[in-house]
Image 1 (cartoon, rainbow, N blue to C red):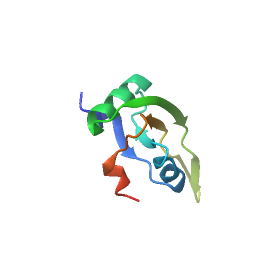
Image 2: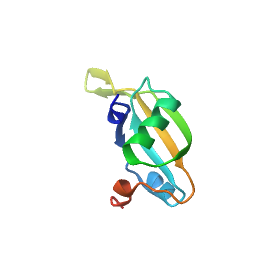
Image 3: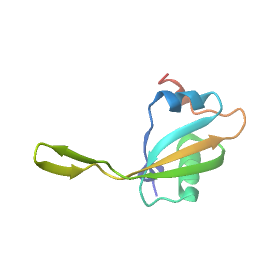
Image 4: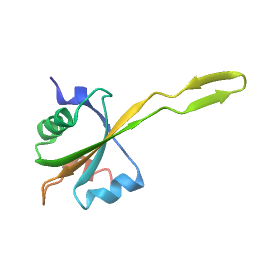
Length: 95
């Protein structure tokens, strides 16, 4: 399985950038993925050692435009802690 089937995109926010100094990176991941799959995908895609993975399931908001109602998509966020002294160079360049 391709690691980018699990990892959809890095999360780009001020809070996510603050974690870069501590070796903590945040990604949007596939809804059904497990912590083990996320760990293996990050290690394979970026060549780093992952120490811990925390996940959050985020329900989509209900939105209304005039008389039309809908719901944003449900998403899953993974917060990945790398081993001491390691970093993901591809994401460091976004700062």
